[in-house]
Image (tube, rainbow, N blue to C red; front, side, top):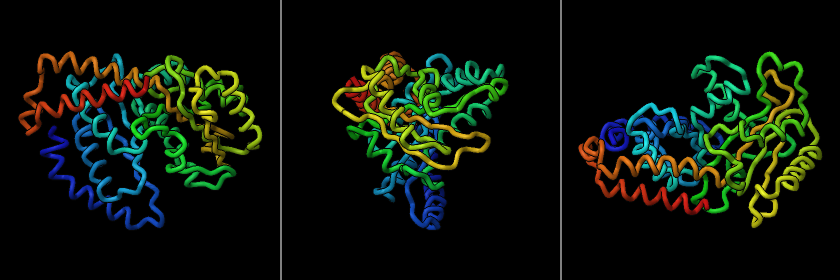
Length: 322
């Protein structure tokens, strides 16, 4: 509430000033990427305020957010469910693409795949960076099959409200086994569709993919990529909805990330993401039924109606993902 209404509102003008200066020095502004958390106050309140303001000023630009959602077991703040529900309410309306991340899933990847015993926030950020850079790589480097944020949105969003994606990255290998790992297109495809690879605590095997995008980087033939994509769709056809015939968008970029010969970033729009919303919604309902902690929000000039509205919006979203 503070971030969105009182303190955020005071700061927003100076923030927008910085944004405007940046935007004015661009040749061809594609869109905005915002990284924020949905659990804390600043990320959810100020973050969504900024998104809606940028939306007003640049209505025709892509708004892409990387949102750290509340994870199932690890919770930093008590009022996480409130903040998350209120900000999802905003993100549904104002963002074009929301990439859901979650700390617990990132820790899991660090433990299991990268074999790190004590992952720090730096390691988590490194994972997210890899995925973020993979998403925008086609804007920055030449490639055979290009894509950009707009093409991504066009290919991934079947209905305007369903724009919450899970992201994955491959190859993820521990430092020790790096030199034994063969990097081939089938291998990368295999790993990027793996449920352990998702940076969000929802299991794609529990839902079906509406759409997916695979961004390959490195020297490889597009034919190989197309074959693998077809292969995935034929083998796992039960995991893709049948009312979209070609679910996967592929793009190939020539320049791989530093230190790798080839890599791939995966973005999936899966119905399994509803697990995350359901989880938050349950916690929200439990607290809201008792009106716990509400006075902090109403004291900042919020209304109980806003909470009920956000709750019903979230439940609608879950039912749309069924």
